[in-house]
Picture (spheres, rainbow, N blue to C red):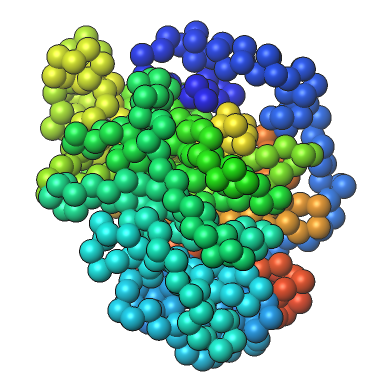
Length: 524
């Protein structure tokens, strides 16, 4: 992927604007006819006009579970057979289990004993509960532990890579796919490989996939917007797999590499990482991409600024339309900040190139760009020690990509625009996060309701969920904003289909890390 979107907003390093726009179009033309391209990006006529989609989508708040204190409600998974909700509880170092057969009055029934290991993720399939747990030393191999959903008894464990951050069953239940983040220690002395584990549930076999084969491709990937920047790190050491989405046919997985600004593509049948998709950069100078860059300008206002956003997605979700694969990312952003290495710097503290930024003194005022968080690993194009370009973490948006990594739609500044219009009092965490990553879209999930595909985007700093109809991938439609007073830090967003729901209606389950709450919304 060459860092292109439909508005020419993405900018790979060291590429002229003409190449940014024309090369991806040329590549697409080699593969698709004009009609096929329209289908691919959702162009042409609206395939799903409103009068053909009468299915009601109107989620309303139902109830809240208080799981515990901070870090007690990160990620949740649901077992339809037992009508139990399994909630990752870092605070108590277990998985808390609730009976939600009555959603309005969920009952605690016990926990999964992890023997003092910290859980990071949970997934459920047909009465089996899989939990990703890190070792007491994060740089050591972690484990996926499997439990019975009804008895809560331990069944088996699989050793995987360092710091397993996310685990999910494939839709057919044949495999568990694990993103092993492989973070370094705080001194940045021990930096394990980031890996992806595929566990064959029936055979009990673990396939650990690393990125060694991509070490020789580093230069080309970086030129297209991928990042390899840890001290003395190879690409295989530097990648940090974060989150997994799997195709409906259970043949392909897409794994976000958040810090690296990319997505890995995994062939689950051959057990191989087949591709890395660099995500490029997003121009906040482009119309429709404006941001509020300062928390010290005494106003909540979107402006065009000479800064690039680094997509750096956290969560990722999969869906298909007309046989085409699409992935949706929550472009949260994330910086590396360790005792042994830190890339973070306020833009006020950077030395800017005089030619590129003749108005540097004004730009670097706190009320302009001075407060905005920047990376020192990008932007010095000519290697002379000053910065010719400016970069900020995340893209303050969600993005719909093709399965091959081309941008179909980016929400631009829509998250900021909608939250500023509807709830100005909480915009960018009441403006306290404007200088960082804004609302921080972190979580995404997709639910099929009738013939409609509904996207839910969790905003970590606004404590809100945005809802969009993405049935046509290139023309998403905003539907509603959801929030509940007392819920802070939405970390996980779980959709339960009507057929599996204890109420017989679609449910949305929000796990709030900071408040330690789980809230339920129902489609009425």
